[in-house]
Length: 398
Image 1 (cartoon, helix red, strand yellow):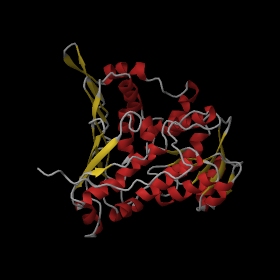
Image 2: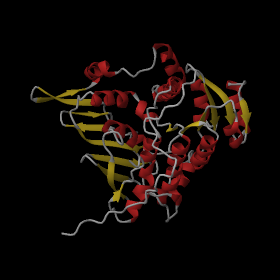
Image 3: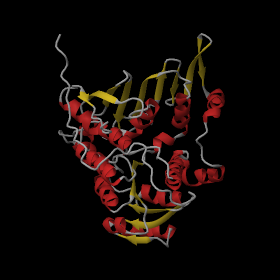
Image 4: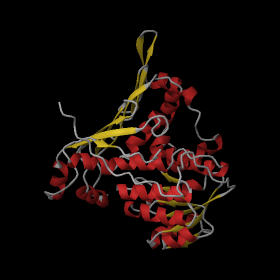
């Protein structure tokens, strides 16, 4: 029997003078001065949130929209303000550039910021092509600056506590995990998302699904992504709502990955068809199972039988592992500024700022950014080749 042909993508050699930034640390800073580029919904939320974080100071603001810029200035009137993101990146009053622009500007702003010696935090998805992903990896290695993607789903309560339980071995050996981004978008309001899906095929928004499960599997720490295969449906809904027979993205995209240790990951994407919101988060272990959707539950093998925990019993089971929570003094701020996301955005910001203040590695590095974003172009490559296996590039290059 002939072997299945695997598709490989180039892995550029690390240039002379570059070195790995796994475990990167930077000199501690008492106050982290933050320049925010892009002051739409997510950017303005960040301006408000960051004012609750000890040691964080919003020192610069940038947006091409005058109304958005003025709304942010009303929150932080002392901050430098302008419409040119290159000027913000050059400001001496900025240590960290926090990027909340449209997707197409994520990479240019991040590269400019690192060229000016600034750490970078960039909204999801940080990059959409392998070329752009490698550009961010190389720049972070050249400058030895933090370049983190603002993936908030890893800080949601269930994912965060399940990760702690997995790391303690509660579920035994994790052998399979699942993640997704599933809910029907309102394309009447989010026209730009409709147009992005019209022009792009594959899992175009993978990071909410793949981020938490990669953390649970220790990707590029104790394991590595090895191959993936992707398949999609036809673009039934996209063609129907736009009348465009060339609408690119299928209603449903499924990607199956295998790791170097023989474990598997299933990632799904569907923003077209009616269904309850779900990120599908599941961990499947030799001694237990955790699932957040549709009903949070944990199943453990105890004394020779399966025991299922839900509701109050589940809360009691998870409580001892909820050690990465917000400091008590920030709890009121969770309800005030971030009730919709249950505090995960605030915890994400808090963890980032405290790591910079303490000079320790961030929870997520540029290689996490690269691996999670790479699902978009790699899934497209597999789909366009009839679901052929694609070898996952090793962004760490070690």
